[in-house]
Length: 527
Image 1 (cartoon, rainbow, N blue to C red):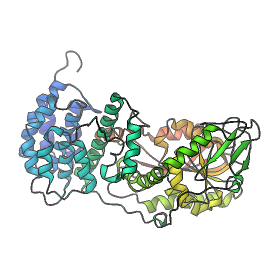
Image 2 (tube, one colour):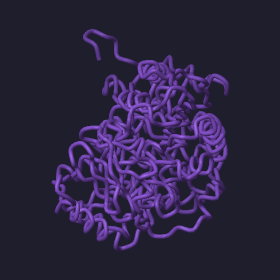
Image 3 (spheres, rainbow, N blue to C red):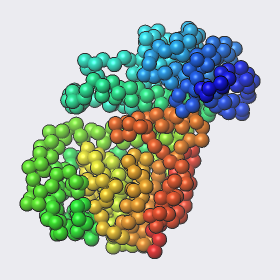
Image 4 (spheres, rainbow, N blue to C red):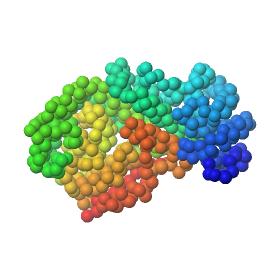
């Protein structure tokens, strides 16, 4: 709090909140929360603690809609003390625990208020038994129940369960081989790293629960979305090898990462015609054009080590793509796009990509189409169907994802490389698809610059990503999704940022749309 500033009180904002009708309620909630809290931090901890009793009194005579917002507000105040559990604010909120649990008991149908209480009560692991007992008869979906259980769980340093929490533990139905795989990498972490990873997992689960609850109290219960694309019914085989022809058909586009020279393709890999660097084709038929391990004389010992590692972990890696496509990606879409009502379906995404790339490919039939950050191949399937599998290069930096992709799309050339340094010649691509990926890049502006460099004049970019929500609380939940690759939390965009990067890369926006916080965009390379 600023020196000599008056302490914030709940009186005015709370009165306005209590008197707000349904149309004014969301705005009154934002003003109330903003009095004590800004982007996950308490403006003045003492004032926040002193306001809690008034919030609990307001709970007693509030209707379900007001109670839903109050539960979220209290959860935000408690969460702001984390990683401290049982701090002064949490202690003050705990005095209302009996009322919250009474609200939960006897619930026969999950409502927005139920979801708001799930978010709030998951912050009290010391009350695990009471909270779980209250929810025992509530017909929660498995993902919600396991999020609640995980929030109520204390870290076990002797056998920490890390990295398999989001979007919910239910989404990670792993076997013992996968659990042993996890234990192996967890053993390499220091106690401090284990604690930090646990805390990040916890914050991310709270963020999903909070985003779902906030949307629900404002709009009603979420609507499930079913993906009926043929990708799911296609037979999935272990990824096989790829012969030289798979990559040689793209020799006009693929280039050496080190010196940008052309490549000569052979069954075990590709050799640079300029610097003689050799790039191996790893088991599973993935051409590794990353800067990992290289040898000018041939396949190096390091490359053989890669082969051994891939074979050893193949069974584990083959499941990662399934987890990603079935659980992680749809959940990310719901949170970041505010897509809890299912307004954007997979079929809508498919049609957007296919319509625009089909037109682009028909206009230029002599150059490949790049699916950038292809992941496990769900949208590579759409790109291949639109333009032909033999024209597609699927590029990602994650071996496990590409292994899954190759299991369903064996005729697509799969390349391991960085989006920040595309192994592609200037002006050599007909189109680039970058779908639900830009927000995961360490330097989005550089990625767009690379896309602009590689597209031919008139070439097309199809892109889907997300913008920041207008509401500061929902924006906090977006940012609080913290994964190992993004320890600072996910960094989304303002639309003007993306437009400025496109202009700098020589790309002009043809169309831009998107409900909620989606950004759907088509751009063309200027001539």
